[in-house]
Length: 71
Image 1 (tube, helix red, strand yellow):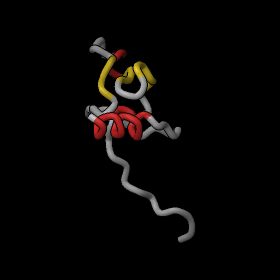
Image 2: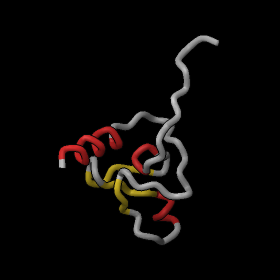
Image 3: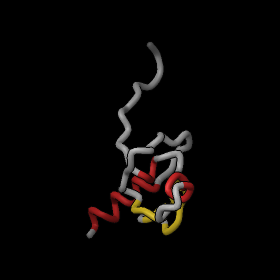
Image 4: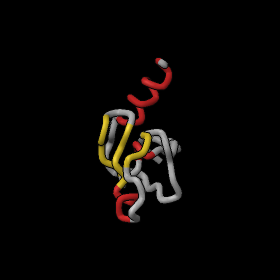
């Protein structure tokens, strides 16, 4: 089998297909929570049962992890 090996992705709101940036990189807007009439603003490093891997690359998680380690 050729090509890159698939790396298991950690589950965070920041790499979920339902997220959109809100207060980059620490907070995101979750469209799933919005549709459920829940508070849609969550931490980038949070994760819920609706997590779905994002099809587009995003640096939210990477930057949020850097911020967390710098504190």
